Length: 139
Image (cartoon, rainbow, N blue to C red):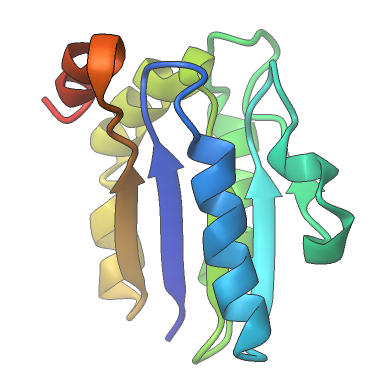
């Protein structure tokens, strides 16, 4: 089935949208079926890239929450990705913890894997002063 790349990190301003854009450029250059989603409720950086036709998706009514109805709609779109298709999702720092909590609660990653999708989590790590903060995002 498809491949889903999630760009996740609890620290803001570390390059999540940049990494998502690099992934999208790579898949686009290979001519694969590509679906891009920006779920960052605060900074719609990835959603601003017109070349990727990124769809801005709201996950909650507030920037710090995940509404199950909105998340389930996104899951339905992802589940419909055809064989060989790719999905790139950029997530914001403000919804990082609520999104992870809901994904664990609903066993979302195993659901996608059992449907035949490959799920990859891309966690951005930075050097310097923010290194410890970004490493904590892996815990």
